[in-house]
Image (cartoon, rainbow over all chains, first blue to last red; front, side):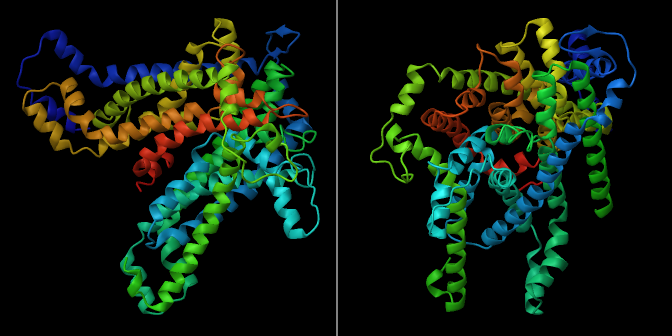
Length: 307
Length: 279
């Protein structure tokens, strides 16, 4: 930055030598503490983990001899791991578009002026800011087969008692997780899209309206291109969160029934903290990091292209 | 809005939109209402078939039990851990952000590395961190959690504050330097006041992130420093869930952050979109 150079020339007071030294090194001095903490807590464990992933440490054995890629080779034979990746992919592939769609429809509903809109928006923030564990617990109470209101409401409309074990019945666990997930994060999409839609060029919209363009045509030709960057960012943030989904599932199904809803984060947790497969868990961690890095890079590339 | 003068067609459209808004609010707030209401119910009302939508009377015994059994200590722990770690992350992160924004320290590469730290999935680092913490005896203590949340929130603070600092007109700082202030004074007396709203908003969000975290807390707490989300999962039993405690605890753990975020409403969109949408 050329700016700082010209700024330093503007000194009028003559600071002490120590003061001058402090000021000359200021850019590095004030970066150092933050970077040190990040290296200590962010990078150091990763390096440690990388080393461990080439060893053979388990709960019973502390074998620190290097075994090369043995743990990584094991990954390919681990059917439960690939199943968990599949579960994660299913949840992401359904929940993400659904959140986006619901959020977009909500934003459409609230975009035009409407007295009291501020209050509505403020209330809709609530699901997004609560802890995912609270969200999961809330829906567990909602879904309860005897004391929850969902069964009661469904029974009312069906005209006969409906008894669905949402968090246990294999046919309903995924819908239950996705309902909870969409409930919590559609408002997130809504907030971002509402902000993006308010920034769409009004004169273009008015011109299109005068020309008598249909709603869908306006949407495709003007609105969507204008909000595309925001949609991309929103999907990237939520997509990364969904790939590492843990809390909601822990609170709702704990990965069950069996390991039917076990996501890759849950599986890693089980391997590390119930099976104590230290080295193997480290290898899984790196597979997850590699996958996420790949996805992020691909998405970012695409975003660059569309810009 | 002059509703009275609107043509009939527009009034009809507005009415339909209000109806839609009502339905949306109902769908999204009903679960919250349900949770809230359970926290005021007696056990008989909670385990009533069919479920009761309105409790007979508002009574606070579910909350009283939390205080009597000492469960609220979990809220206190969360408050300490999230509060201290956000404070440290804000101070260190803002200073770092100033350097990145004004001196371009480390160039784009350093900035990208910092934000990429936020993309690392917690599950991938929590296990090695656990092993290291066990080695140094940091498990189940305040220090370990505070250090972890500070590191976890630093990339967010640096990234957000860099954006807010870049928004401050450079001329202000230049004229302050010409007036004889040194850099430290410029940071404290010129930049900080200008970015105060952004700083407040970022503080609130870092606090919420630490407050809501479950995975790190689950792994690194045992009996001493249990935070509120971990406490909540202790109530889940195989057969009987302590619904009264779950509901009351959830309300206690949600109200503070809802109030804090509501105050910061204006900065919400920028805060949750990592600065990408300026709202």
